[in-house]
Length: 453
View 1 (cartoon, rainbow, N blue to C red):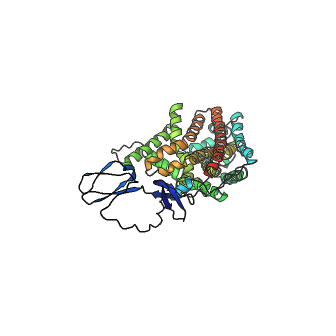
View 2: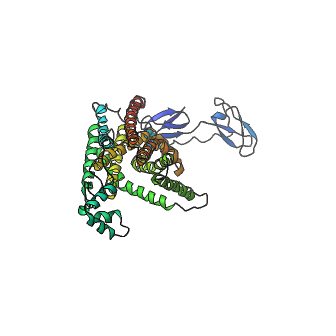
View 3: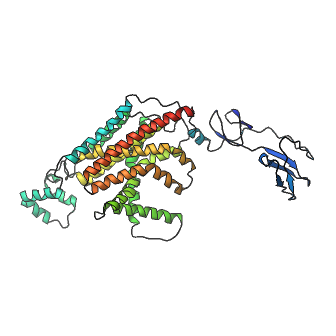
């Protein structure tokens, strides 16, 4: 055992190798013990203690020299000068990561109290989706448009003047810029109000029902807004590049070629998901590795950045804080997606129920998927320490995002196939798995806390 002086002032004994300071948690490299011997040619040799009793080759003359046991007296031709007093050994650049992975400083997590039951309240957000599945409604826009033309023949003349009209041109021609039965006109801005109400209600729900652990309300706002703005733009950019690679082939073995074909596969997956002629399996493949992978990765970016960058045990997110971030990123993404769908597909066409489903049930579903990602990211955060190259990210990310990707892809595939009850079952399963994994992770953290202390 060697005596080590840490930079923080603590002294302790440790065997050779990487030693963790009991005071500050930093890593200090402890050099192995050396045995000094002299060769007959006059060369001085310093051999590791592990080679005691064996022969080593003299670096000067090349002959074999016997290494004595450490307790034997060694006669040197000339005694070496006493070594000067050594300054404290430098702290390893990964010392901060050691403090994160040996969380001795933070106190054990507090009990959730009534919130352990109140967090199930998030499941009530599924009610609009349930009602939409079991409530009959006529959402066929073409059928309602033909009914308008039958009642007002002048509309047929106006529409006939349009050459290959787009959806927006048709709506602009109709009275009030809407098909009969539509809740809003084409040029309404009501979906922005729905977005603000949805974001405020869900973030208030998180602050009320979910203990944030080491996270703060400011952090979850920042994470959600980032995902709903910059994250969405990154996703759209990736989609554009993925579609642009289709029909193009390149040769080579460089990193850029590999990345090109990864992005090309994502583009193929999107096309497989959106093609109405594809069957269930091909659609499922497309929605899982296209839509599911890209959207769940977009929502996971803030947590990946946090766990890769944060080095302090007092500030790294615990399981409750990670879930708070995950729910927030899902809410930000779901609200932003609701704005897009409303302006592109609902305004002037759909009834009011679809807005409730989109800004309530779908936002909650995105939050649950990203919350599930957060639990897996928290559990395997130590794996991020050894990631030094871009291709080392593949396996950890698939392990963290895989379950949500599959559930996301299954839900979208069932909707595409008009299997609404099946999609509802997939949504309920997503909520159930999230709640079960959350409780399981909280128990695991509670079991780890005494060992860390």
